[in-house]
Image 1 (cartoon, helix red, strand yellow):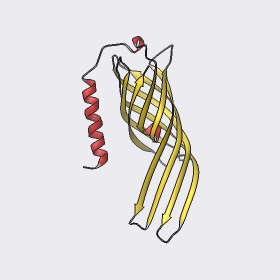
Image 2 (tube, one colour):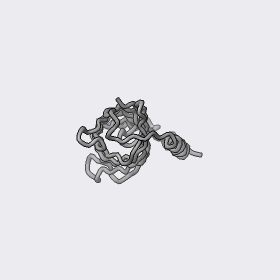
Image 3 (tube, one colour):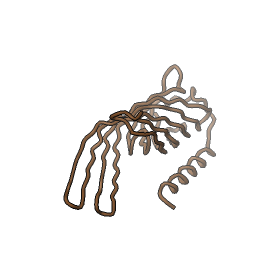
Image 4 (spheres, one colour):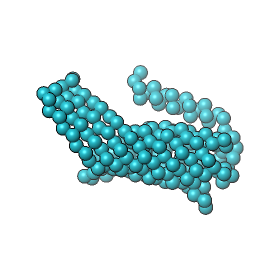
Length: 183
């Protein structure tokens, strides 16, 4: 079983087990309107540290901002290898549906930053390149927030760079998972 399938199954088991431990509260009754969380996946483009705040007039609405770092590497039969580092920031909005500690989270945002690419060829050729890049993302997922402050999020994110010069060349999708603390 590959790593992606293992991750998806583990995330689904965690979500299912947390859904069983709900407490009944209305989102308006929860005084914890800020949170800090670590996220792996879409909005963070790797791993990121994020801050979120619920709006005062309607706490079902919230905004988030974060900084993140991502890394990818690939090779072709030891003849050529590439690696890319991403140093990005994200900004987004979300809306919570449901009652109690478990909710459906719908959101959208943008991620932008610096992408540092490296190419190595066995013949000794090396190249480095820095580029600015961005993409827009959506979030469709499960969110659990305990009265004590623990927060868990997991879901799916459609992604688009609109095919522009600095955006992604095509549409994509990614899963995300995060753990944090509300205060």
